[in-house]
Length: 299
Image 1 (cartoon, rainbow, N blue to C red):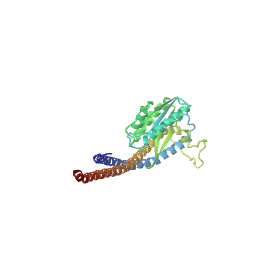
Image 2 (cartoon, helix red, strand yellow):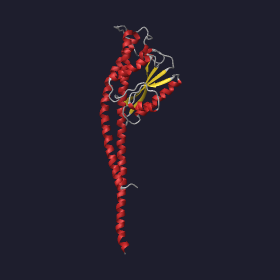
Image 3 (cartoon, helix red, strand yellow):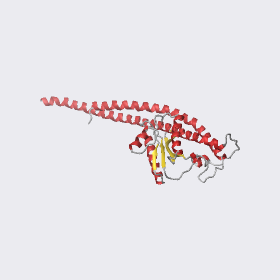
Image 4 (cartoon, one colour):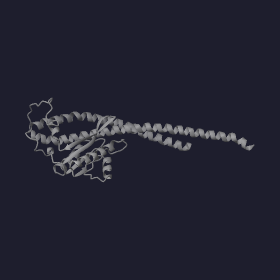
C-alpha cells in the first residue's frame, strides 16, 4: 500500500495536470469559435463558386478539352491527401484520418491501381505514414490550425502539376468534416479528375435535377476560357474549405479530449484523496494501539 507522502505527491501531480488540461480546453474552445466563423464565411462563397462553374460548364460545347476533367482508365498511380493535425492530444482525430486513408488505398488497389503515394498535410499523418514505410510524395506542415488560402493554393498547385503531367491518375482527399462540437465525420472525396456530376450538377444517371432551371447568360470571355480559369480556383476553394473543416474538427476534438481528461483527473484526485485519508487513519490507529499497548508491555 502506498504511503501518505506518496499519495500526496500523486494528488499534487494530478492537480497540476488538471490545470494544464483545463487551460488547453479553454484555448481550444476560443480558437474553435473563430474557426467556425471562418467556415460560415467561406461556405456561401464556395456555393456561389460552384453555381458559377455549373452554369459555365453547361454553356460550353464540350468538356472533354480540359485536362482536369479527363477521366482516365483505372490503374497507374493513386495520390491520397490525408488532412491531419500538427499536434496530438485530440483524441482519435488523427488516427481516424490515417486509418481511413489506408482503407481507401486498399480499396482502390483492388480496383486496379498499381501504386499509392501520399501527399500529407500535418505532422501527425506524416509521422504515421512514414513509420509504416509508405511512400510520401510531399509533406505540408505548419498550418493545420490556421490554414490560409495561400496554403490551399500551394497544395493544389502541387497536385494539379502531378496530375497534368500524368504522374498520378487520381487524387483523393480524406479529411474530418466539422458537423458540430460533438460530431466530426471522416469524409472522402475525389479531387482529381473533377467528376462530371460535380461540374454539371447531374445525378448518378446523368440527369439534371428537375428543380434547377437553366437561365440565359452571356459570357465574356467564351465559356470554355472561363471554365478553364474557374477549375483551378474551384480546386483551391475545395481544398481550402477542407482545411478549414479539418481545423475546426481538430479543435473540437481537442476540446472534447481535454474536457474528458480534466474530468478524469478530478475523479483520480478523489480516489487518491480517499486512499490518502484511509492511509492516514490507519497510521493514526496504529499509533493509538502502540500507545495503549505500551503500559501493558511494561508490566
